[in-house]
Image 1 (cartoon, rainbow, N blue to C red):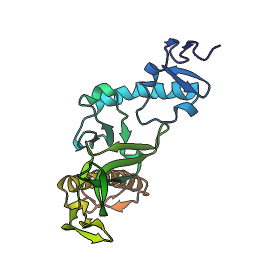
Image 2: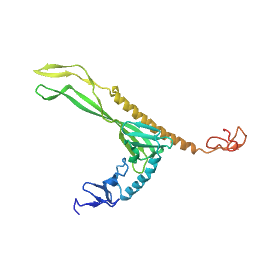
Image 3: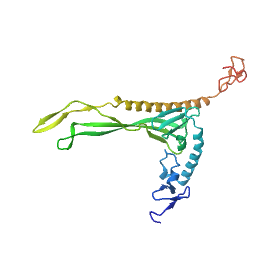
Image 4: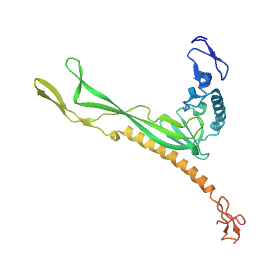
Length: 265
């Protein structure tokens, strides 16, 4: 078969168009089937047909979980972390109609960690000479930009990390420069001064993203810990006690009440 011979999708059986093939470890998949996979899944090329079919079955079941999901708390700007605190579940989606996107519904207990990854980039500022040349300042001047990535570590058969950009656009921070001047040395005139220092936390947008990122981190780590505490409490051996109300020896129920008279123990 030639390099550009058309193939069939091993998932749905349909024809795969030019540039539409998504290669698997032991087969081929069309781009339409690939769109049904989790957006956080990144191991396609190392996945078998059996792996993909299993995930597609999970994604179909996930639609039921999406229908039952009720947002009680939402955190984020474009992409949001949405919590269903009553059901102990959360989703991450940037879609306005997120129900149509079939976002992965995860249990709080699946969270294994969360941190904020702040990326700094810098670009050098230059000045224009009278002859049109762009030359560096002395010392060099830079403009800085920052991006905030939320990284949620999860325990899932299909992916172990959810990473998304918190800010909608890069946050630009320009240093405050000292007055500049010039100095003649050996017939050459050099630009001097103008060195600057910058503190990104002086930028309002930077502080807002920093605060929001920490709010997301705390929310996810706290709900995870709450689930673990509940599991630990449920596994504590039940001990019979004497009821102060009726005097009977009883093992308190889930609400800490006597099984005979219902009094608090």
